Each structure stands twice: as C-alpha cells, then as structure tokens.
Image 1 (cartoon, rainbow, N blue to C red):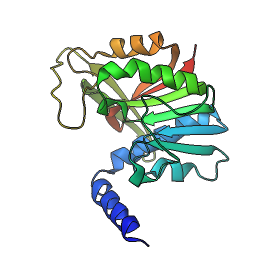
Image 2: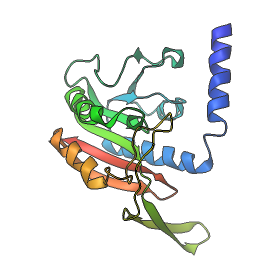
Image 3: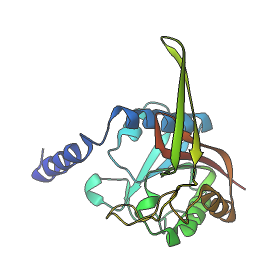
Image 4: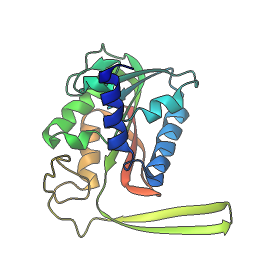
Length: 210
C-alpha cells in the first residue's frame, strides 16, 4: 500500500467511523432498495462518500460509475455535479444521496436539469430534512414492526451555514413544496417521496423524467 493510499484510508476511517451509525446503515438499506426497484443496467453515483453503497451493489449486475470532486476518493470521474461530463442519456439512473445540500441552493435547479439530461429515466435523491418529525413504531411481533411518522414545518427557523450545509429542507424558506416545485420545473416527476423512518433527517425522492 502506498503512502497516499494509507493516508486516504486513514482519512476515511476517521471520517466515517463515527459517522456510520446504525440509523445511517438503515438509510443505506433504503437507498439500495430504491435503486434495485428501478432495475437499472447502468448507474451513476454522484458523490462517492465512503463507497459503501457501490460495494454493496457489486454483483447485482448493475454497471456502476462514480463521480466526485475529490480525486483522493478515486471516483470513476473527478468532476463537479454542476456540469456533468457525460453525453445525454448516458445512464439508466442517477443516485445522489446527501450531497446537494453542500452546494448553494441557487445551483439546485441547474444540477437537477443536468441529472435529467444525463439520465435515461430515473434520478434518486436523498436530502436533509430538519422539520419536526413525530415518529411512531408499532410492534406486532418480535420481528415484525411498522414505523410511520409525520413532518411538521410550522416551527422552521432560518438556516445558518455550518461550514458543510448551505441549506436544508424544513428550514425557513425551504419547505418541501419549494423543493418539489423546483424538481418539477427541472422536468422531473416525483414518483415517490418519504422520510426514512429510522433516520428521518434523510428525505428520499424517487424521480422520473417527465
């Protein structure tokens, strides 16, 4: 192992060791479930993160490509999501989980249009939602339970940039209806949207080209 590889691994373990709690692994489960339900032959991951989802999907028959602006993560392509270096309709689906909030919201609509251009059919997103979540878990049997919840945006407050997130759903000025409106304006149709019960901070959107 080279010094660079050792440094990158150490950085990843330090960054993700405490980051990947069991609630986040539940989020990974929902992410892979939505992707597999779409049955894509080719998939572009925008924002490689710790590469867990890509490794999980190996062996499913999906031809995967990764894009990240951090070359040390060794994505297939090092580039920004603002301008994708791919031809129209290059992939059956695009996945982008907990990434777009790291960019100013003014770029959101343009990025969605890029996703629509490069995808043949589907886009799957996960975005942070800070609105109040009232959750309920009903257990019918030791191994059978149902989790449901309700989002409440009435107590929203202004978002303050924390060095990572430029915006979050549920903060003042960013209600779900605004995000959905911009998704639709970019030519994408919301086929499914929900907050992950085990980790309600993550709001999933399954989109299709209109």
